[in-house]
Each structure stands twice: as structure tokens, then as C-alpha cells.
Length: 477
Image (tube, rainbow, N blue to C red; front, side, top):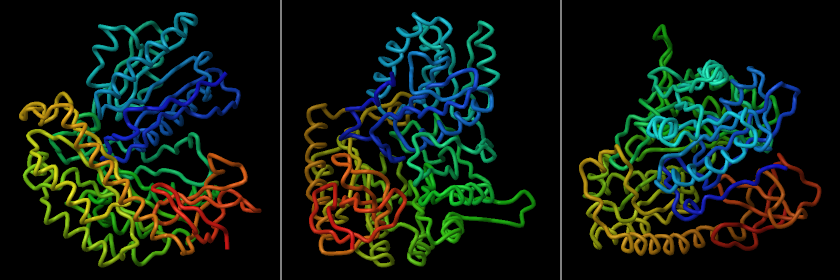
């Protein structure tokens, strides 16, 4: 029997989202091609992790592992982890204890931890708690075959070294849980922004951009396979820059974005995440030139107060952020969707500074937001230098105020879509009814409409007649 998808309740309303977390755990879909060993993967947290699990699956597929959705019978169980919030780590630890109950019944089962928790908690997992056989960091997935061989021989397998070069550019990912319509393409790895609250630079290493030709080839292959949408992924896509070895080619993010868009007018292109200090007018004008580049920008603010932004080491202030929003509206218009991340109760945040965050939300009118209260992460600059001095109840109250305000803004922004025709890419059936289809428009809004004769992967013009804070409802025209 397949293991059910897990829901991370701590991420439902409080996603730690500089890299756009989804608030879910994904279990890899079975491949069943007759390979001698079986691999079960659970991927936690963000799109980057889901993309990495596709790379891992590809590497291990070539080493004789089929994917399975049945944890109880798997030969190798891997958890691809998120370390953004403390509760995420607690959830993974509880899950490892559950998995070890299966291992007691099947001693030959191997259990491993991948990703962002690997380096920080390797000694606890391997030595103190003795609950895993394998610990592998995000830059060491090529070493998995050798590490598994070590574990098969009775040793522990560990590689958490970070790399300045690894981009996995030559590996064709196995598309996990794919709907056959949308796919992720990782264009860079790591992060050079040392935000004081964030563990990503310590868990994913320094920033490096992938060869532009390999990205375009992967996108071309997806188009040939019938995919209709790609999302270009990076911790900070706007700082993408690649130079050829001989120095004759240079590609920045705007140029890469345009090159992918030109592959096919039927291919929708999205990207995540943008950093307010780096998003350029060139990127915005590129989006405006191409109808198939979706008019949606995830632009994390984190706070609406300049003093707090300085403590966060965000390297921009509120006026800078407001200017970037004005540029988006000027170049792409009021219909371009903007989403954000907001942290409530960061170190020393006053009540007035919390009100500044709410006033920034009023200024921007975000379409959607990932919101959470501050959770101190070991090893970060904030943990070393700043006191986590806001009472938990105050953090929770401020978070709820932000959530409530965003609900109003989301409903307001969705109402703009009523009475308009939206080009919707069908992704699947509606969750509530097989008689309705679900897809998204250019602004990333979910649109539900009667199925009729349309199928997954179709572009459908839908006249929207009503909306909620999260969904548009309409009829095909």
C-alpha cells in the first residue's frame, strides 16, 4: 500500500519562503521498469528540493534503482529535507523514527537524509541517534552510488561538502509526480546573499550559474516531450550570470529568460525567486515583450521597515522596494501579479515597525504571500548577533494580523479577474469534482471551469464569473 502524502501543518500559514515553499511533502511516483532495487523519496519544503529529488532519482536510476511509492518494501528510503524552520526539523526526526519501525522489520533497508539538514545534523543522525545510514548534502548527489556501496559494505555513508562548481547541468532529471504539463528547471545553485535570518548560504553553498546551453537544451527536450510550462528556479534568479570558458559568451538572466521564451510560443515560462536588490528593468521589459512569459513576480519583502530590513541584511530599504514595485506597475501594468514573503516578530521589531509591514502590504496589494513568524536558526548571523526578544504570543498575533490583511488583498486582487477572459493552461481535474478542470492563468491564479471536452495540457479561454481569495471560477468561451 502506498504511503499517503504528508501535510506539514507548520507550513500551511507560515511558509518560510525565500525560495517559494509549497507547504507539502512529495512522495516520488513509481517507475517500475524492472530494476533490481527500489528507491522511495520524500521531498520536503521548496521547489528547489523537489527539483533536486529529480536529479537524485536520475542518478540512482542509472545505478539500478526503480522508484516506488511503497515505503514498507523499499530497499532505500531517502528524505530530502528542509532546514528553514525548527518545526521542519522536528517533523523529519519524527518521520525518521516511523521509518525505522519499518527498518526493524526489514534490516536490509537503507535510510538516508539528503539536502539542507544533512550538514548541520549529520552527527546527531549518524552517531547520537543512530537513525540513518547515509547523510548527503545538496552538492554531493553524484557521490550517492559510491556512498550506497559503502553502506552496503557495513559502513556509514557521509558527504556534506559544498561545491563552488556543481550545477548538475549534464544530468537529465527524472520528472517526479509530474502532471506532464509543468516542469522545473534549476538554472543555478547556492546563494551569496547573507540574510541574517537564513540558513540557505550555509546549507547550499555559494552561488553558481548553470551553463546556458544546457538550460536551453533541457527546456527544448521538455517542449519535445509535450510540456507546456517551465519554471526557472534559483535562490536568486536575477543574479544569474554565465560566461563561457573561452569568454566569448555572456548570458544574464534577462537574456536567458528571453531565450527560453523564444523556444516555442506555446511554452509558458515562469521563474522564482527574484531578489528586490537585483531585479532589473531589463527583466521587466523582457517580460513585457513576450506574451508567454507569465506576468507574475515573487518579490520577497520580509519587512516593511527599513531598520528591520537592515538588521535582516537584505541590502535594500523600503524606498528601494517601493521603487521596484512602481517599475513593475509602470512596465507590466496593474494586472501583473506580485507575491511576497513576510516575517512577523523579527529581532527587536517594535509595534510601529510591524505597522510598517502592514502599510507596505497596503501599498503593494500583493496577490499572495508566504507569511511566518521569526524562528531563530542555529548558525545564522541573527542567531549569533541578535536577541530573539519578541514574545511568542506577540509574534503569533502580528502574524495573524498580516495573514488577515493578506486574505483581504488576495480576495480584492482576484475580484479584478471577474468579467474578463483568461488564458488558462489546464493542469488537472479540480480537487472537488472530475467534472471540472483546474489550471492557472498568466498571473498564477487558479481557475476552475467545467470540463467539457478539454484535457490536461490544453490552453482554454475562460470567462471568469466569480472568485474567492484563492480561486477564480468561470466558463470556457
